[in-house]
Length: 188
Image 1 (cartoon, helix red, strand yellow):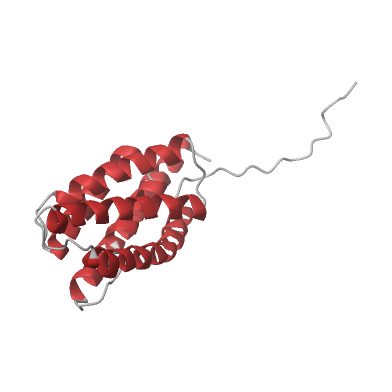
Image 2 (cartoon, rainbow, N blue to C red):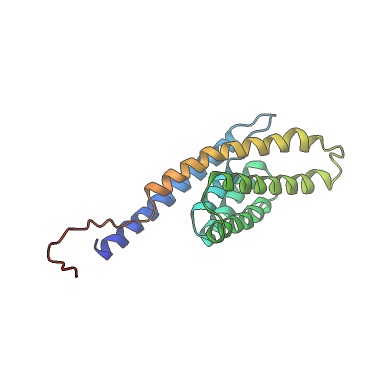
């Protein structure tokens, strides 16, 4: 395959892949903002950011995690930048884990996603409820944050599958060679 053609296809695939990831992020943001009930609902922006971190480079995943965190701050009406900092660092660490140590497997994704969700939920509870003395018994943590973490992790499975389809379809361009049999080769 021509090297210029391969580079052109890889750039095209990269742009299309990122457009799909941005559309997925917008869908997750709309889901989090549009459905307001008293019950715990999944925060789809967290597994969306972690899925991106699993599939892409560390710096890109940190930026994507920061944007997802800002959108989550907007959706949850929290202090602007709180979730952005937490999710940005978490996405950077997850991306480095997958680039250096781990394979892209659903179980690896699930435990890292649950870790990020737990860290975000624990910090949210600590800084917005416990430190101010609003909930000394932990009722909000048990009735809202823990079910929310479970639902978010379960929804992360679908997002992991969907980002896998995007990554496989619009990933790196591989070259395929067909070996031709030649009678001119002399073996001694």
